[in-house]
Image (cartoon, rainbow, N blue to C red; front, top):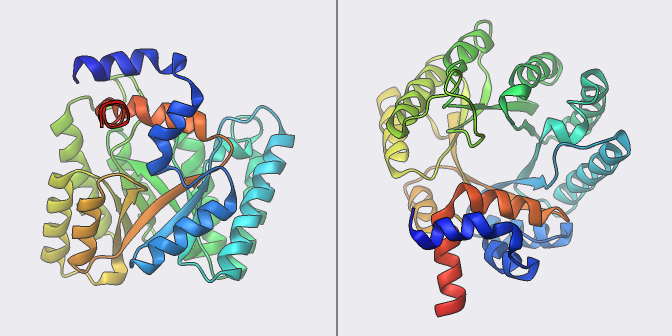
Length: 300
């Protein structure tokens, strides 16, 4: 990390919102749903499928949950109306997971029922380690009723993940998104070395494929893309048994290459009024990106 990048990360809370908005414009569709629809239409025309995420997490009360629920119902409605190649991705904490797990499950079950009726799909995002067990528990509950209409995210850097895969797939294949993991976790539960995380990612992906599970391979890492393609070739997987996934606006040249090689590629499209909080988090996760964007804005 360069000196400029370090400086930007430390001073992000002091950066005026208009500047943060300029920095984040490439990887947030906008504040309103119609902006997300426009972005998705453009991506669909280029051959990409998408998942739409309404920004927000860690609500304080169920009035906020009701707003999020309605927001996602609106997303499902416009996906159907505009015939978008898109599904939805939700964060359990934005539906009250840490307030009342049972109530959270009831609300999400109702939302998932609507998605399934429309022939759509809901991905349950994974958050920090406090949420790992209840999120998997929720997924296990939902897939008994909704089958392939629901999936879950697992994080390669957590030491527990190989066992989670083994338990989830003991009786039937799962529907996974596999990512490295972004939350800061203690060394007791998370792998800290860069290559160690990569190695476990490949090992877990192999186990998921071996179980017959569908996997969304979520990475921007050339090495992991290469390793995933090798596994896909070795196992003779068909195009409907996996997909690659990437964030909006990140490593677009790599994403175009993956698509050109005949793989399905889904782009994560976030939008919403909480764009500022999401932007700050993403820039902190990727300081080099922040530094590059700052230099582009101020120095051309």
